[in-house]
Length: 193
Picture 1: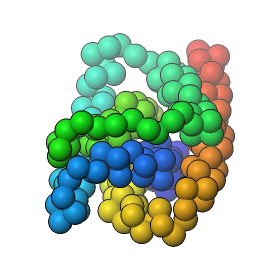
Picture 2 (picture 1 turned 180 degrees about the horizontal axis):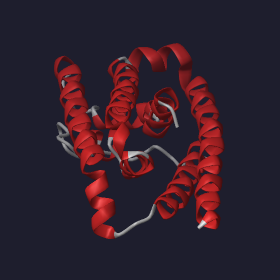
Picture 3 (picture 1 turned 60 degrees about the vertical axis):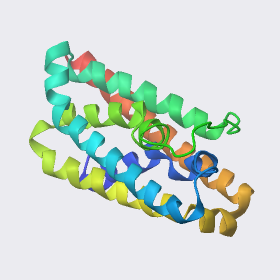
């Protein structure tokens, strides 16, 4: 996987368009003048968590004694399930009770959720010698997601609810194809043993 493909895949997994309604709901009780500051803080926390996970990924895999093909197959299955959820979403009507979110639910699991962390493990396992490439891909995907989340109100007003749903489902379809390819690659490596 090249750096651009990794960045696009990570961006699709982060699903910033799908997270817009959740973000708006999580910030409902935050005063308008603090919303941007809260989103920036949560974005910074999320990138720190993801970078830590990216660089600790090889150690985690070694500790758990996982081989590349098992991580590839598991990653393909996880991405496939995420993509299915994007194509056939559940209700986003979750109500957040706290006044100002801190770490949860915006940084974790909205931005740095289990799916992105699993994908980072997969990248680390695929080629541990390309950590600079994976870091660039992660930061590029995070920046694109950050811009979308920072301008959430304007994007939602521009695209409308139907436009957001259509884009999220399109992203889900692309992610299904990436997931199937990852699954096939993992199975291919397994049968070459």
